[in-house]
Image (cartoon, rainbow, N blue to C red; front, side, top):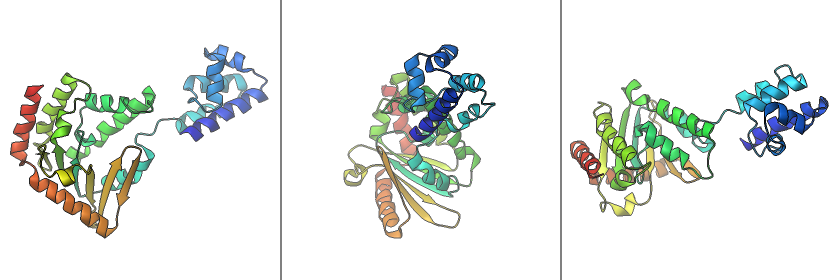
Length: 264
């Protein structure tokens, strides 16, 4: 995204210079300080729609600068996750284990916004809202793709990690048993202390396509890996199976989640 900012900012500068307009004049018309315009032109700050509109009009660009706003829209998902998202969208089965947080497909809007807003380095408001919107839209698969199996194993730690405060967390916990009522969705809880050797290694997602190709996705801060190697996928599948065997049943898990919610 920084490269896009730099390119669009440079285009503003080129058009402005060609038209004989100073940064001060452009900033005054757009209601920006000189340093703000400079930062946008140098790609250190995302060029705003307002600046593009004013620069396009003042420089006689006839829509050429304004067209750049389509390329400045925030990405709904991190670049590293795009291949996984594409495969997930066509999968006939999705089995996941989450070690610390409620997974995106099960998050309430409040929980998702609190989690995304706490990213570091901080995201701008537009990117936060776009990613929240995209996450909620992605959840529609649970009800739209009724032939796809979605199974979730949640570590108890994720249920007790208060994201967004008590009220936000309580509403998040209340949502889980409701989503778990869907026929193609199962939610289980792995109580603390069980299967520690594997459960503490981190989260994972296992995917199966209509062609019965199998993938495993592992994500960590700032990095992720999508595995298609049969040996790696098999090993992660075995680990997931062992974790799932130690988890509570679906019915026991729903009761457990309600109990945690009541304790907040």
